[in-house]
Length: 226
Image (cartoon, rainbow, N blue to C red):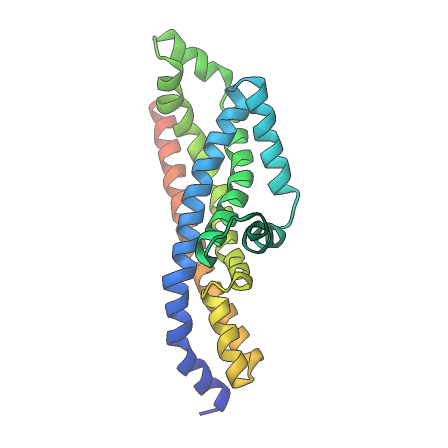
């Protein structure tokens, strides 16, 4: 067996462990928190008073207009200069959450606005409040539209978590770096890390397709009933 293949086999458990224990949890937590933040930000931009709208716009402008790597460096290496210190994993979580929140807010805002005004009027005409109309009429339709772009954001986030290595978070890419530094085989280790990221992304892409098909069938079913 070639030495490079034996190294990949020997390293696989460590890389997989780092992926399952750090990369995937970091991705899931960042996405859930970021999507929640994005939802609140989108509603703020659409329905809040003007000062809050301006604040939400500034947040989105700031985090969409600066590199994610710079944001992570500012949180982990910059904030300690003013007395705010985070451990590596929380620092990465905060950075990814804020970044995902900014991007997902634009997706949520766009899909809510894509639902026709007639849907609101129909909801109000049968006595629904704003919150009831949003929950029962608008969001179900917006969710179907939002699935593809939000899924793409989630898949991109899986790969972006490799940036957490610069904060010394022991995720998948950092584990590959550590092994490469002792075996002097960066090509082998980084290739194996890339293959694992590709595996995770492929599984998620398959899940995205199934989710889109589910919502597509649901929309067709509703259309047939109307």
